[in-house]
Amino acid sequence: MYRYTVKGVARFLALVLSLVLNACSQNGWTERERIIIERSDSLMFVTVLPDDSVLLRTPSIEVRKQDLQSKELKTLMAKMLSTVTDPSQDGVGIAAPQVGINRRIIWVQRLDKEDEPFECYVNIRIDSLFGDVKRGPEGCLSVPGYAGMVSRNTDVIISYADLESGETRKEHIAGYTAIIFQHECDHLDGILYVDRADSVFVNKAWMEELKQFDYTRPDWW
Ligand code: ZN
Image (cartoon, rainbow, N blue to C red):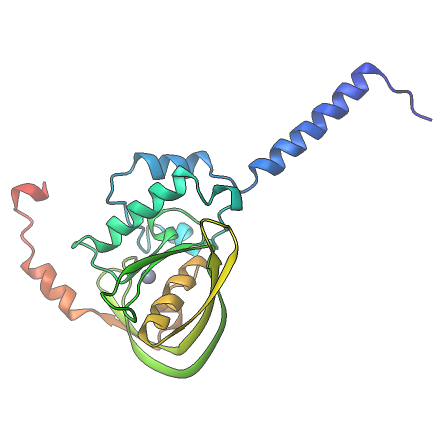
């Protein structure tokens, strides 16, 4: 038989409170994530191999349902879009680990839609891969200067969170846009295209661009 003392009850309540607080904060925005999101310019620092291997290789976690309307998510989404569409990057997609945040968030240019808009997907997963397998060239903002030949399916079913309701939405994507989705979702699982490529080579176009680049420009410094 237990004897309930005031001290014992207080200790028990403190333990319950700490467990509840811990559960509530589980997978909420961390201080490190907040600093990266709030303190960066609209153009975010892009993580690259080999310097940022740990970040790029860490599987990403979901954004909590109660954070889908948070200012942190809105700011991060806006800054990721500015980064991928900036002429210095000029990508067709970007994943959150590429700006130092291990969350399941990507932007993809919907080349399959009129006007080819960029769209953001939060808590995205690929449910299934099907269709033909096609081999084509891929590059990555996080592996600058290289390109590789990768074989991927032409069709995917994706699921992601609706930011208003938090409900899961599903969509069938086909064609080259499905390739972009696979490349970006791979980032969320710590996989890079170089892992899947049957050959990787120096991107000659990029080398040419590099040769043209004038490091003596005053604005470079
Ligand atoms: Zn990439």
